[in-house]
Image (cartoon, rainbow over all chains, first blue to last red; front, side, top):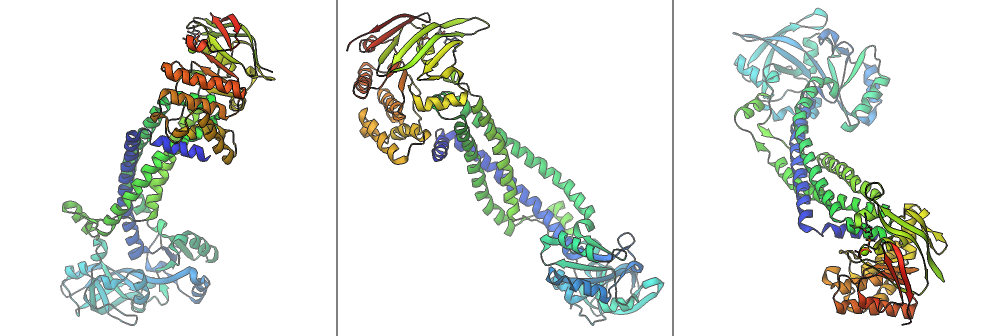
Length: 407
Length: 229
Ligand SMILES: Nc1ncnc2c1ncn2[C@@H]1O[C@H](COP(=O)(O)OP(=O)(O)OP(=O)(O)O)[C@@H](O)[C@H]1O
Ligand SMILES: [Mg+2]
């Protein structure tokens, strides 16, 4: 066995130039694939991350009708029973973030506009989404506050500032009239235009009072201790919760439209990666093919001496693996600093691209993912390709005819 | 002791299109300790004959016994194993693995035989000494002359302790001096260690040293002479 590995290794260096060219072609393809993939995963991850963080959370518990008809009438009652049930999950649940939201009209002296008034528990919300990062004016609200936070876009439209008072008029739980005067305590920049032009935050207590919806929530966000076990937690929640009243939703379900859009977007990158790997495959195959043809007489000699076909095949297989592994490892080794560099120094975008990004509330940069998965996934593809190509010489060695090969 | 016996050994190439009778009903026997040259004009079937008794190719007709084993009926993998343990080969060219040193080339065959490492190393050194290459042990074939390469090949052929060694024109690519040198080594091994050698050749000087000369003409045995040397 050792001799077979030794032979394979030394054979690799017989035609140094050819091996190096093949190795470098694998290297560059792997490097490119990783960089592209990291870029793709970076924006994908950023999108999901910010959606999960700022809007949906990993898991939400809602009233069973809320998803189809999001109205305050379909809010859930956060009673002792639900609280106890969730307590029962112990530290599988990291924390909960309650929200109560509904549409309301917001009026100043001169203007009236629709808005989304969201009741939050500032302390708990903080864990999900640190609003203090977004604060551009004033202060954040506290639990017992009856003041509000207004999104920067909306504040601009209404031309209001910290300290001004807004009138909110809406519909409360089961047709009750909701109305009140609220002082602006702070202005926050929510980046995403849909949010930034519409959102008003108040404390949960204040919102429940405003909407006349005591102990009611439109959504209870549940953050799993380990986000990787989200699906498991959803299953367990579903098993114990009363499904006639409550519905447990995962982020994938809540974001399914966005995910569909992104996977469509991913297809382009996938085609590109596919082409790259076809190039690797052909380069590698070409090298292996020439190697087999060139060394017919040597193989004949080895078979004549009494080397088993299996041993011969294994030797060729290892040669293929060595070449592709050398290329893949070197590619990964080179990709790590490249990706790391872009991870810390993302490419700034300019022009239309940048504006589009800004519109979506993202920094106008190209984020890169620095996740082991990015590297592992590409290495795995190279491994699969080289194993498949390595099977060709294996097949050839089992079919080699000494008399033909000798000539 | 009889080690090789062929019975009505025939080989026809291109069976369908343009049949060439390379061997025609060859009946031959070889004894342990012989030093035999197979001679004959080009195309007379020397290589074909050696390939047959070496188990590298199958005859169209006839049987080959090596010891008690009839090798034409062995499966491909059994035959490979049989060659490994019973037959030594020295080819005209392409004998050695270019990526292994002289000593590694000699050890290689013992590795295939799963000889224990200590014995293997000592034997490789000993054999390379016998062929006069003690100072070239760690040199790769590309740094050896043709004659030296053939001597390594002889050492390797001996390393597996085969019943006999086959050599198809082992001196064809060598200059006179190297050819004689190689021949001397082979003769000495034959005399001192009773190694059985069968080789094909065109070279009269080589033929003159053989103790048995079999002449093939058109795939058939034309003469079979013994000489006291
Ligand atoms: N693979 C083959 N296919 C077809 N015909 C072959 C093949 N190998 C050998 N022959 C033919 O068989 C006959 C015997 O060939 P062989 O190589 O055994 O002769 P040889 O005595 O070794 O000749 P040389 O002295 O030139 O090496 C020749 O007519 C040759 O053309
Ligand atoms: Mg010949």
